[in-house]
Image (cartoon, rainbow, N blue to C red; front, side, top):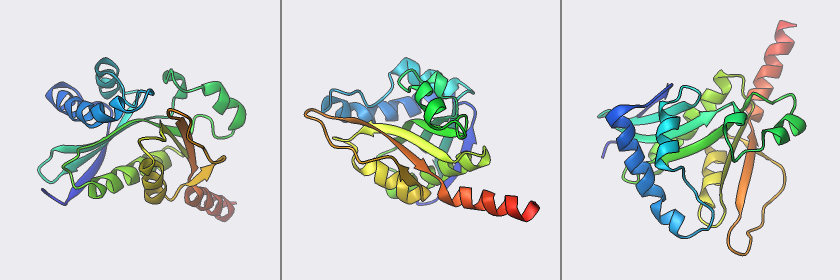
Length: 196
């Protein structure tokens, strides 16, 4: 398996490539969804619609043969995510609203050397956020099954957690994480003082 990965941002993934990504995505979440009452993945219809829609950006990691080994489905439009309470963000983050990038879905092909594909994916998501003047990345996941995900995202992006700690519930707990891109904020502040 190749160790070289390229990252690109796409408006859409359609056709055979979309079906291949769906099959991998479904297979990677199948076992997770058997062990938690909280569904951890989109259904086929919603997933393929998100891949085809230009209202979601797709951060894509390819190996050196051009095969997709990772995808992050992202949006700044929290209104289009029925499981996200956009009013909460408008109220609590008024200055950042519209610049909060939500990671709506993620897939890394299991045979793609794990961290070697996940780090480029996370860095691509961070760059997408920065390219759009984003300062916060949000995502949700099951604490029971995906305790590793917040740590990987924090390490790869350098994001600082916003809010308190979460405790697991009796069956499971769906947690929402917000990470502030402190480095990007400092850079923007430096740029504004040098141009003033």
